[in-house]
Image 1: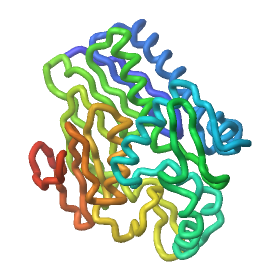
Image 2 (image 1 turned 90 degrees about the horizontal axis):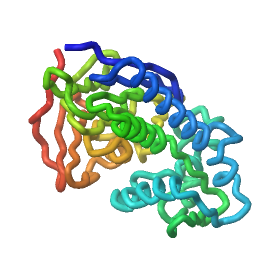
Image 3 (image 1 turned 120 degrees about the vertical axis):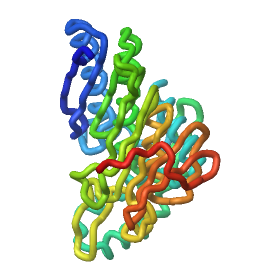
Image 4 (image 1 turned 180 degrees about the horizontal axis):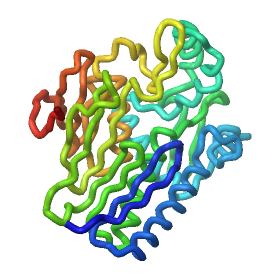
Length: 305
């Protein structure tokens, strides 16, 4: 089997890797450059932590309730809105409203108090979208698209590669990935999923073909506070969450990312059609969840030794 073309770069505080089969160095380099430029532009535009980003200057530091969006941003937010509504508001981009107030807290009790105080200014009722017109219904709400744009960038990278004629490859941004085609030997790509109890160890693998995969976990990017760990996922009680890790396979990284996050918050989140998930509970047991209703099985899961 011929060696694939590989290109690695850093973006959105994440190690990103492109792997293409059946391309020469010139095409691989050309596609990689186009991907990096596209990803860098998305990161610059939507960076929640950069004061001068378009997201912060135009939306989060707005001078008015209504904002007219460009077609790209409107399409992204329309997709987000649809699935946020489908999850009953479990997936929520208004969690940025909490960000500044949570920075100085030192205990989980203080963090809970902040969330309780600001909760009325978050959720689906805090924003609406009418075509390209975004309306934010109170002055406190801030949008954080950190759980959206990286996944959208993964989809965009795969699209750029396919449009350029790459027929087989893998786009992997820190574990959020899209696999398209098969390897030259006919084998599918296999994604390895970490053990939530020991993230440096692999727990199982999932084989993919023309599919996207994301994994969300309470152990990832957690912040240690007095009384426990403050999860990066805003959940009512992450210390007692049923699922500690959720990996979702779907047609796009953006879709997978929204539902892998939602499952960590509400274990009863119903997956959309043609989507399935593999979750790990607090005892380390593996469960497979499928649409249209959640069903438990161990089919198609490769456990790692």
